[in-house]
Length: 267
Image 1 (tube, one colour):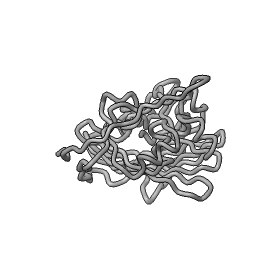
Image 2 (cartoon, one colour):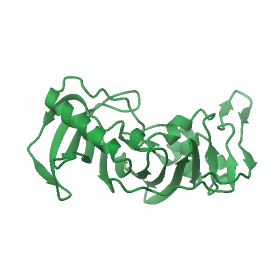
Image 3 (tube, one colour):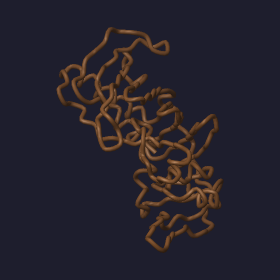
Image 4 (cartoon, rainbow, N blue to C red):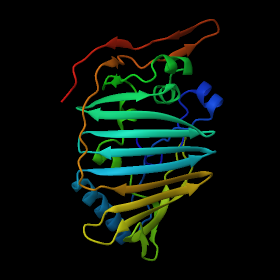
């Protein structure tokens, strides 16, 4: 999942109501609206330089309505690994996502699976702690695997709205220029303030991004530029040929569940 500006995505009303668990959502951002040309040029140059580095580790720490999430994404140009931790009422829930050869592999506890896949908590318990393959035929493939590769992870770094520059400062020991703007609003995300700190040294690179407002806080830090992360496919796995959907009528509830297969590891 994409760690940038993902604050709420209520995939399962039952689980959300029971656990108040919030999964971040990715908005589409307009990176040029009302912005000064020099600030926009600096912002886009930093993103270009970042993508050219090919590899990066991004740590996203979020909080919303008392729930904390931590996404640690180790990105390569065409693959990556994402470790996700949710903390609800002091209890941690975990998931791991691997992306390799355009196939996603997801493993998590019952709560994490219920949120990723939009299934019930009881279904999540049935498939907890087992690797699940999510291929491109899955309706949720793009949502689940988004933000794992380098270009995808960096695609939503740019700010929106009227962008201004603050006084030079030092962030994590790095001399930076900090831009101020907003995160774009949609049905999941309110319009909130956002800052992006970019290193002054050449090549300019993102160092830290902070969004806050409306009870939402998210801090992203960027590290390990140029350090490749080895990625291998897990085995055995459950093949998620159809993402489970639960359809409720006045009399019946029907659910499509995944089939179990054993495959050979990829790459």
